[in-house]
Amino acid sequence: MNKRIFLSSPHMSGKELEYIKEVFDSNYIAPLGAFVDRFEESIKNYTDAKNALALNSATAALHLALRVLGITAGDDVLASTFTFIGSVNAIIYQGANPIFIDSDIDSWNLSPKLLNKYLLECDKKPKALIVTHLYGMSCEIDKIAEICRLHGVYLIEDSAESLGATYNGKHTGTFGDFGVYSFNGNKILSTSGGGMLVSENKKWIEKARFYSTQAKEPFVHYEHIEYGYNYRMSNVLAAIGVGQMEVIEERVAKKREIFEWYKEFLGDIQEVSFMPELENSRGNRWLTALTFENTNPIKVMQALEEINVESRPLWKPMHAQPLFKDAQGLIDGTSDNLYAKGLCVASSTTMTRADVKMICDIIRNQL
Ligand SMILES: Cc1ncc(COP(=O)(O)O)c(C=O)c1O
Image (tube, rainbow, N blue to C red; front, side):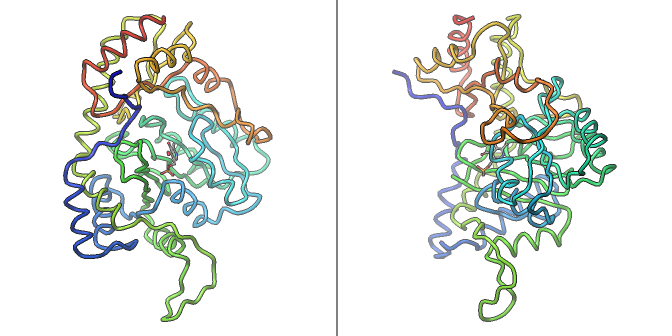
């Protein structure tokens, strides 16, 4: 049996151990320390975000964004329905109501048209939108930002999957009031687990920093007026992040190359379609995502499993999850259809052209 090929496995640069050793030598094993600051700086330099806060997950980052914006029990919060649950759990944490908006077939991401329609017709105005850049591909963020601005809705970009993706040359995550990146084990960069919250607004990031460290008031003893969380990133994991950031552009290039190989080997097949990339954008192609017109993706997944290759159906839309059976929104069937036909195929940056060829041969045999 060949060595397992994962959807997206961690891929170290080689510098991480050296940086972790520095952490050990300084005995700064605690959360916070010089590498946390360095990691925040490297994200700011790379994305051009004005302020950054390193946290223990992107889910925590989304939670802090909602808390800082004053989203509270009973508020409505819009979200992409075609996303991973981590994108919307924070809405529940705040006791708010998720309102799901369907995708556009041109981007597979949240439809600006449906968003605008919902905002024009709703009785109760939502306070915020969490929009996902799915599989590392930018949504129509300029239109979506403009709609949010016109309707007075805060915009949070869930860029958990899209570090390195740009729209009109600007990094995803830097268009909205807040942006969020994930460094979970399967992301384009990994710190084992971790997240980053970014914003132009310094006060908001400082408030989020305060909440992320148990909301300690500035006294020598511990004084608390508000409740907080234990959400900060550890200095050990930040050292991994600093090593990973040195290769972000290499990783984006490799993910994009893997996508091109899939297109080369499957592009001639009529029933195969790939997730589109919007004009004026550069996706990071975190996972190559495709649909089959007439073939059950589960059958293809099982065939790939037989050769020890991981693949996975596209995210099951949030509005179709039992957890959200009573949620409101504007759904036109686009994401349901993509989910029924779609598959994410192995896209680890350690893969070779021969790996992709082998996977594509198996896929072809199933069609
Ligand atoms: C779209 C999306 N949002 C949020 C998350 C949550 O990120 P984390 O695991 O860092 O909390 C993930 C991935 O895990 C994701 O893919």
